[in-house]
Image (cartoon, rainbow, N blue to C red):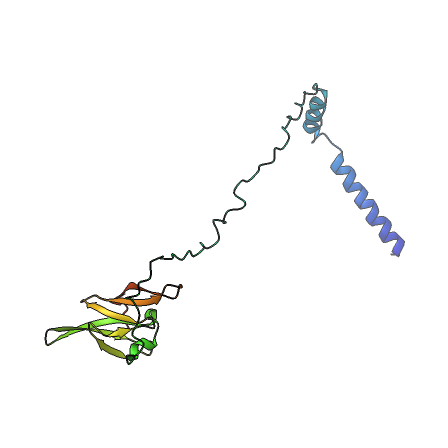
Length: 179
C-alpha cells in the first residue's frame, strides 16, 4: 500500500466514526432541554449595589509609642538634699568586694558562728566570701548594715550630682539558682 492510500484510509475511518457518534437519537433529550431553556423568558438581573464613598480614618495616636515596641526604660531619679554629714571615707582601706558592681555579687547562703550571722557572697569569679555587718560591698561605698538569713541590707553613699553625697539603701537577696 502506498503512503497516500494509508492516509486516505485513516481519514475515511475517522470521518465514519464522527458521523456515527453524531447521528442517531441518543442525544435527543439533551437537544430538547436546550431548546426549552432557550425558549424561557430571560430574568431580570438586579443592579449592582451602590457603595458609600470611602471615608479616611484619622489615627490620633500616631505620635505615641507602638504597642509592639519594647517599653522605654524610665529611670527614676531621687532628688534628695545632700547633707554635709554624708560623705564616704576615702582614706580607709578598700575591701576586696568593693572592686565589683553590686549587681555582679550574689548571696549564696549564710553561716552562724559564735552568735554572728555571716552572709556568703559570691563574686563574678565564683569565689565565696564571708561578710558581716560593717563590711563593704560594691563600688558605691556600700556598707552592710544588716545581715539576715535571706538577704543582706546595705547603705550606699552615692553622688547627688550637685557636689554632694546621699545615702541609698540596697538589698542583696539570697540567690535561688542551683548549679
